[in-house]
Image 1 (cartoon, one colour):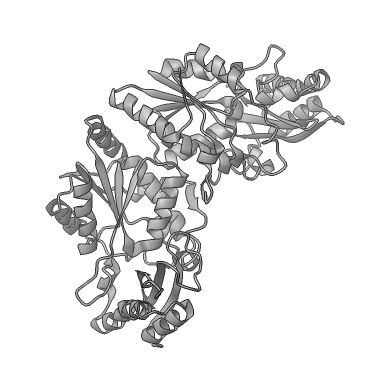
Image 2: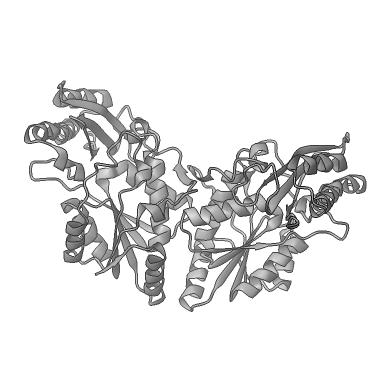
Length: 286
Length: 286
């Protein structure tokens, strides 16, 4: 496995692969890899001939006061996991080369990035779209893999790629959970055992909502009431949002007439966690 | 010469050239070609193995009330001129494919795009940066040629390319003038003979400023006073801006201690014209 830090070196490596007709796949990550990331890499491995994993904690997607400085990092372990998972090149650009003095260009996906996490974190998706655009220019992939855990991010990237005519296939990978149901996240390491138990309410709320909808419920309000009941009031858990939205344009949905997105975000202590599920109503009796 | 309209077809053509190791050069234009464009194409011809000229009047860089609808167009003549100038592929995407329903992604170069034309035309450079970013993804050029007539546009594109790590060499071409000194522009066709004579004051003002600076003047204020005198008050000519700025970051310059940009914009009747010159003070006596 090659370890590449310089942007120009990454571009030359990808040019060389492309000239040989090899299909290049990118899995962008912020490191501190867990089984969710490794699943994306295994999908990426199958989707092409050369697999690049980027590891970059992107300052542009953190607002002042968010956890950029203390976001967990362990590059040595990450590199070992990349190698074990069949990565051909691990790409670790420096923040100094990514955002040099005078940096001033941003990519804004102006509609799907506004609600949900975009409402809570106003610079987040501008930072995500910008860094993914940059990474695509550095790695020049034929395809890139993103997790459905970050559903709104996946939609934002898909929209950017389509709107800016980037010749990159965007592949989504289903959300990966711990055995107890908690959605995998690098931020889970912040959780004490007690808080982790509370964090489980997120996936439990999704399960309850899914059961309700399978049972015939079509009203978004009724589903969200049940979600609120499961999440419950708690001194150590503050719900950021719990919403039912269109799966493509993220517009608010009042009545379930096809698949919809149930998206949750909550602070457990000071750790912000997200989770989501696409709910598909069972066909109405004729 | 190939004439390509579909975006995917342009991408496949460029992929094929690139796999053969050919260097692809793009000259982006809004059509209604004049000698200025043809000079860019001749430079592009020398700078690579395959030359693409795009012809697209970009709605995203016109504000409501500007001249998008009546911007001059003559695709048949443009194609003939492209062919005569050695273009390998003329690329004429449709506005419908460039900006389909649901389009929502924009590239913002947030500092060099703000003063001068950016102050007069608030959406202009966002539209320019976005369409150039899109064209680069469609044509996948190794290099692209832009005229120094649109000096701020050239700086904006250079900054975008550097910030977004686009692997494209940006080549500038000196401003091309008519025999009487008027900077070449597709909009010159709008000018009556009488107004054209008034429009000449722009290049005359640049000449006078250059003579002053060559004569030892170092004060930006004094140079701009002389520029204002040459441009003069006139019922049919309204100066939009006349400014002396840093050649790289476009910050205002008060005293000339190295090369500076003198940038002019004026409405002659309802036609907006721009012109500029880099003024280099002669070395001070020791």
